[in-house]
Image (cartoon, rainbow, N blue to C red; front, top):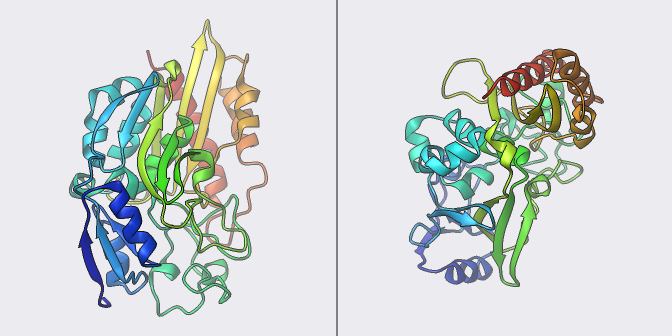
Length: 328
């Protein structure tokens, strides 16, 4: 680990000012991803700004929905009764992530800021990684790519976003409240993370010196009928091979509203609104779900070791929708 400076701040404005003073400075909440990357010599910020004293650790009513502060711990959000009752898919997704110890430390804002997962990115002995060193290539494309993307990737990067929570937030149409030197703004979760394009080292649409202050969940009555399904190599403490978040509004056996988001398959949570629209007015049957799953996965581009993900994702969507429709 390289030398760095450490400062503690007491207000959001102080945190923003500290970031503005030192390019490359990083915010430290739980540190469950950042500190690992520093130890591996992947991240080397000159300054760590400890934000744990900031008053951003509450869950409260907000415009008919909920506002979850950026410093709320994942465990606290997952076990919050309002979250469990109104947005069960979010509680399930967070409880499916990492381990109990990590969930007790990890923050909501930090979860959103996790770096994408790829062994070539995490190991600096591999010279080819456009995410670590733009222009050097992507070793995963012709290397071991079993866990990599099948959607939205390109010739510059095929890593996947590791966040379970973000997949649930995508299906809920959440938004991310941020503040920076030029004031406050709200970023829809669908545009918060970026596809790799030609700049895979830029993973979010945060502006320089902006920080996340909260996650806003809109009023969404049918979100009470929602579910998170995670498929992984082992039953705990493993990243998703494929995951799916679903929410359904079903009346008299027909679908009125539908939401589907995939994880483990792209640089960001993957949603296809056109596939969701296909379900509107259709019977809540496996045949309907199969058609929607095919639409979600249209254009999938697997690589040598991960072609199985296409069929796995298709079946996960059908299973997820079936399980959600069966909820009372």
